[in-house]
Amino acid sequence: MTTEPVSLATALASFSERWSPRIVTTVNDYDVRVAKVEGEHLWHVHDHTDELFLVLSGELHIGLREAAGERTVVLPKGSVFTVPRATEHKPYAPVPTEILVLEPTGTSTVGDRHDEIPSHVDATTGHPLTT
Figure 1 (cartoon, rainbow, N blue to C red):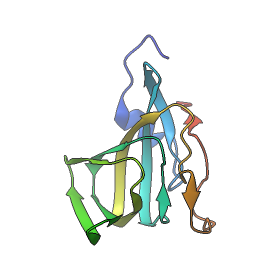
Figure 2: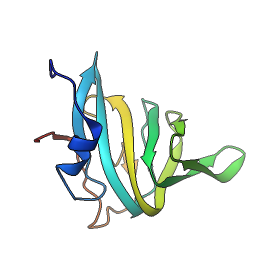
Figure 3: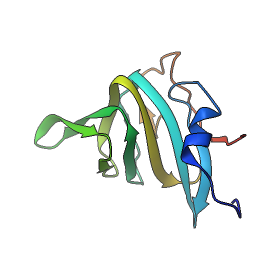
């Protein structure tokens, strides 16, 4: 954990990879991660944790497979949404988008169960921020 403020703009400017989050700080046992995203992620599930998304720029769509059926939530800039634990979901960004994600330290970006991982998605628990 850093003892100095972290500029999210500086953090996001320090890398260019899509779907490859950087850990900007921690809160208790949670990572605060930022990522640049565009296009599709993959269907996946986090069996034991919720996942919070905050859209910093652009627009994020999240497909959800729920007991009542499949639906998509649309998050414009400034919106926040929590995917409940054990809910199959698939993020998609129709335009270049920057997001902040909050989830327990060590949580994989592709969840506990997932479809085949495409080459443009980084299966990681987050990368350290280097600015």
